[in-house]
Length: 351
Image (cartoon, rainbow, N blue to C red; front, top):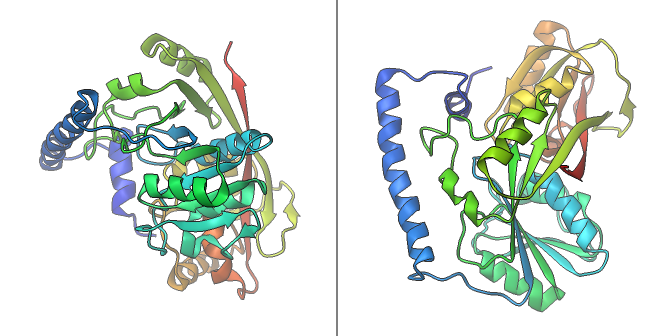
């Protein structure tokens, strides 16, 4: 399958590929301008030339410094479910990559249920959140976080608002900021966009209240703990992510571990970690990485099936995030099994 631009940039950001001389210089120039814009914005907020607006709810931001693939979504869902045992909760997501316009707030889920059949319209991450949270949690998407918060408070009585992402968005005052960091990938080459994966300078970690290190099979996790302790004077927690099961998304039936050859594919920020998880179950004859938040089409499915026929394979494995955008496309496909890897996670204190 054809490699995409985002994947090539991720390889540069995480030191898997070295850019040529000309591209490296262009990326450095881009980083210089981006860094100055971000630093100027943060300066204006620090000196009170710009102010963060307060809303009538307790606001928790679960964010990260880098572009995608860290593992915020399951952490947001767990946090929302725990808090919702005692309070009304709203999750606000930007709704990136959705067909649905996010210029005004969209109710993805209210106390009566989910408003969409799959994530192809409302966005993969908001739909995933809607599926994972309980009745006492509302999920809203909007580019305007303040407008979305006010809607959640006025219409649904939200007492706690959780911002899924939003560390870089300083228009709204946060009562608590949780920074999520991939224990293995960390900050890649430590450069800002477009040369590196950072959306904010590392020094801005000072705005966070705690760090959650996400362990996605990192065999040297103790090194990540020492790195975080030595560099950032913040409380630390760990989120351990492990494969729970693989199931057929067409039937819902669990698939047992075996040595069958499969084609694995995904459209997530860090595809390598997904492929490593799948390897615990199957031999992957082919691994296909689409752009993060890729909008699947029937042509994509046909191309995957064409590749499967070349390898004499009839089983595909993907992520739950991707499943939300695929189910409507593969519902009439016969003779091929589209399966989903489900992960489970546990958040613990670090002694």
